[in-house]
Image (cartoon, rainbow, N blue to C red; front, top):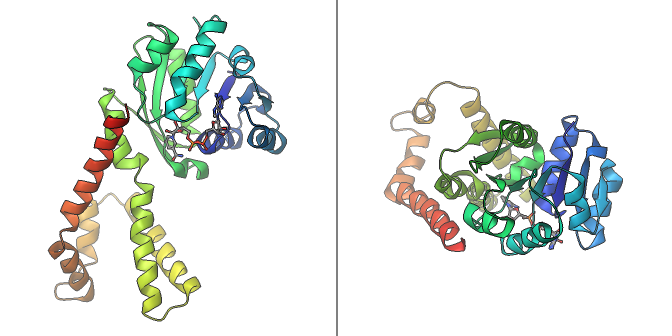
Length: 267
Ligand code: NAD
């Protein structure tokens, strides 16, 4: 069984750890490090994993090291590990946005096995999607570890080029919030129509869940599913016409491009 060290006990690492444990990974093979105690102790108490305040202790423990700190801290954390440990056989998995393979390898030493991943927040429910891009030094065994780890929290997409990590941020990394915003607007308007706050939320969340399930369980294209529920001259068409006339398509495209642009700027 592979041992895995998580540097940082924040939201995303926590989601991955929980997913792994729910999928049968042995807790004693997982260690988490975080300078402040609350989050790492909570994880250790809840799930029986190992914990430490010392990144080096965590990195020493495992051949696979998940870098789950904020992007601006990644290179410092890497340099510290590199300066104090023999890392030649280790594989580093970054989950950070806006921190490139070149920056990570510059901090760890050129030729180091590094995997960049881009998960999203539904990973905490096992419903995430993660884009993965490996450096050429990554071995098949290291690929398997990353694949199994990220499959524990959702689906996995191996990418051919690093630039696709930025692309995937626009399509799935930042995208849960796009759907939240849409649902939020609908929920607010349902209340102005007279539904209680509780009923508004129930109506919107169940509709979003049902629509997503229809897409997941149907081989038809999404466009076909939309057409199937849009009768000519009916209520749905009246609503969709407003979206078309208001430029929803251009707006969504612009929003995704803005996420992509921001991701490139952060590197
Ligand atoms: P977070 O703030 O919840 O977690 C970061 C953790 O790192 C904190 O617990 C902090 O105490 C700890 N930390 C700070 N300095 C440290 C150090 N020197 N050594 C060890 N731990 C340290 O952040 P998050 O949302 O989990 O994001 C972490 C990474 O995941 C980021 O790089 C982000 O780009 C990436 N990511 C997040 C999401 C998301 O939706 N949350 C999605 C994809 C990728």
